[in-house]
Length: 265
Image (cartoon, rainbow, N blue to C red; front, side, top):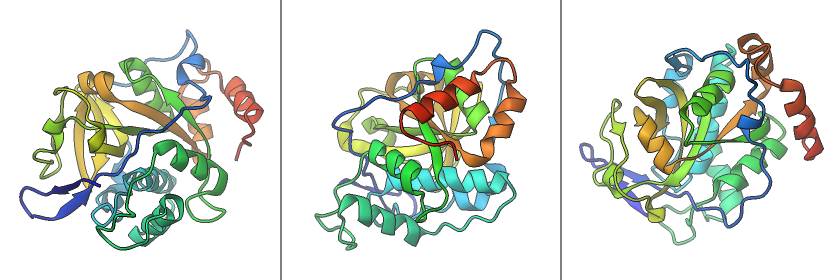
């Protein structure tokens, strides 16, 4: 498990995303965007109502639970944008990480070996982030090489979930404050496995939240490195139909989700 040191405060942070051993069938967003799909705005930011929560590291300074922390950040943002309280804590994120990864709860222990994003996304859809609550309907694959598809994902579903090996230039040193920019910079390094979420976009790239900081991952970097998904939250359905009434095949998506064994929440 690789540990990063904040260049200003000296605080430790963990990586911890493992590359999935196999990727099973996944619905792809591009299959549901129709020719009449409206042009997304030039920029969007869904983090504002959840600003305080987005700065919560959710235990990723204690353990390599970045794949879990990213999920909680998405779920918390959904709740905030629906004017609901956010109940999630770092203890929730660490407890779920223990359950799914086998970590024994001791900081810097050899049992802290990380987790892959597909395990997290599948558990989230089946069980929720708190037992029986805060489920997603599905996680849909997004083509990171297509900036317009990524914009569509963030605009429609108000999130993207990224998982990748960070290039060394992004972590040596790691970002020191919000406002950082991650641009294409050398090869992806699977030893730097990390997961984080996008809460918006602008002409420069996607707005991301990681280690309690907001920054930009440029469109060139998204295309070069990112494996990404968008998750379908319970409260997002009405917004989708309002944003793209004739440009998104919602009926077919629901049918395909159900055919794969999931139920619309």
